[in-house]
Image (tube, rainbow, N blue to C red):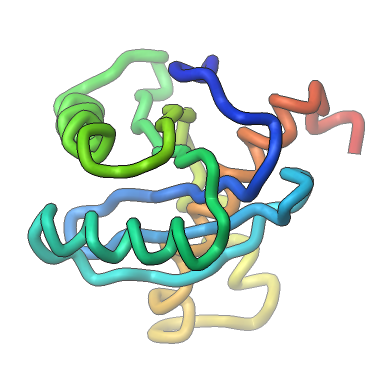
Length: 153
């Protein structure tokens, strides 16, 4: 999937994995090379969510926001993707950085596998899975921007 908005080639990138109850947050390093899980936010109102994103953006020098877009394995956007696009359109009017969408397919599955490999189970897995999923989305985005494919690593 391509970047929907132009981005600045500098500064950290923040990614969101939007869920019904929780929002996973990940941040890149300033060189936009490595993504790291940051936090999991409990969803509140859009206004409260925007306030928290604005704080994170300012605190971390974020210059681009990547939002995970749920694409079906058949390559289509469904109702959930429409909701994400609507949510992101609202964010675009309120946040001081451009927004790009990136396919989040299987990011939660990859995150769960990574956490299980670290020995996390049950509550410890659930507490971090959304942030790790956001990091999976962000790393995929960063790699694509640098022209790195999974076989190159």
